[in-house]
Amino acid sequence: MVNLKGRDFISTQEWSREELEYILRIAFDLKKKNMLNQPHRLLEGKTLYMFFYNPSLRTRNSFQTGMFQLGGQAIYLTPSAVYRPALAGEEIPYTTERISDVARVLSRYGDAISIRIYGESVNWIYKKGNQVVREFSKWASIPIINMEDDCYHPCQAMADVMTIIEKKGRLEGKKIVVSWAYSGGIKPVAVPQSCVLAFTRFGGEVVLAHPRGLELDPEIIEFAKRNADESGGSFEVVYNMDEAFEGASVVYPKSWGSLKFMPPNVSEVNTEGMIELMNQYKDWKATKEKMDLCSRDAIYMHCLPADRGMEVEDNVIDGSQSVVFDEAENRLHVQKAIMAVIMGGT
Image 1 (cartoon, rainbow, N blue to C red):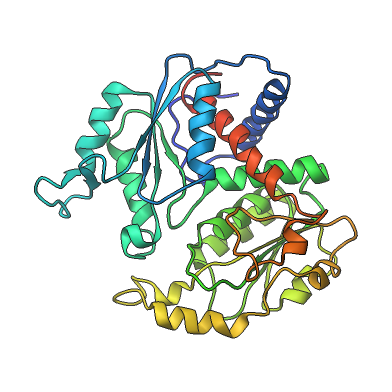
Image 2 (cartoon, rainbow, N blue to C red):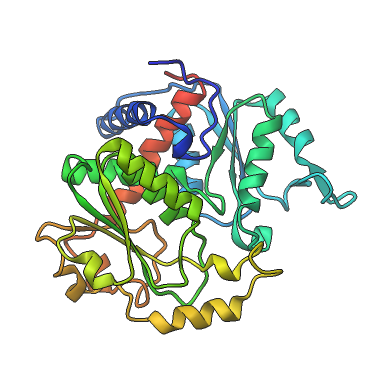
């Protein structure tokens, strides 16, 4: 295996399948060691800086706990606790600091920088969060980890792949549905986009389901098609939730907003238009009846937090087919593997 120390982890699409499989092997090993209480202080004395422009439960605590278990420390930073890192031309005197300066300073202190930024933090301007992450990458001499931007959530996708392998043995030959589900709020497209990219990379028979008007980034769709061709899997888009669920092994119903109501497709985010569109599809919900359309041993997945009563009924998310808490736990293990690989612990 090529030495992966120093690599950024911004999207799975920038890593080969072999490299991603290497991360998964380490993740499974670290999970086993954690269960057996075996020390695995691979990052003794190392420091991770965590920039959160958005709130977090699973991401913050899995990264911070993971660094502690690996023997290092994670320092939590919010824009309100420091001069807010800003792109060139967007500085506000004595309020912000240019990202190029922040990245170079932290590179002198620590060993990696992780960033979470999307939605209101970038005024719902699609791909501006990703631009911020890549600006850090441009100037930092230490690895950058994407903890979710407005385009990608690669750590979640890797935890999802790990969970499917645990429950199903493999992704190859499995019908895996990534479906839109109703919510009264607006959520970014990062999770479904990263899921279809990762699941097609690992050979799944991936079905993307959503109402018309809630399409994902066309570039992501093209990448997913290419991944499926290369892996021997398949990828298709359907516009009916029941049709998608029929015979599925894995279902991942989750809400996301409409890019056609977000900049740069419009001058400013059209929240009312987006909510009006989504309110037409309140029946796009994970219910017991829809789960009955799947294969008998199908599993229900969600990245959490789930909007109960909107995206999913309690009897599904709390039912026997739900693996959402195993999925959440695997964030810890896969992120430890990512950090160990790129920060020089393996």
